[in-house]
Length: 109
Image (spheres, rainbow, N blue to C red):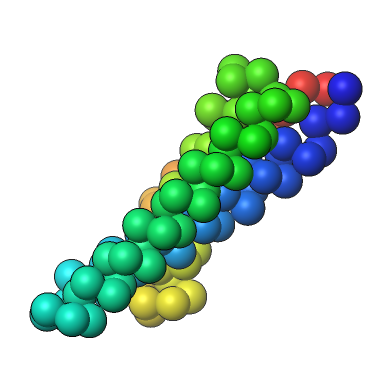
């Protein structure tokens, strides 16, 4: 069975989750109308991510899909760096590297 479509869906979902987290962070700095817009955008991205993950489960075992979904942690750190200007320290980047390595180990040969 070809696992690549499921893996691509998980990766895309991880990126969407990273962007959703950024939306929630931006929302926290706004009041009223802008807050609702940013939260709505973040929630919409989460819903799309859930649909991607569910579709990925058609081709991936959950024992593969779930560890790959940990890549969302890496996506959040990268999105926060690029879009919010946060500056993760070396230790945080090392943690991201371990998460990526662990997710790679979950992919069957």
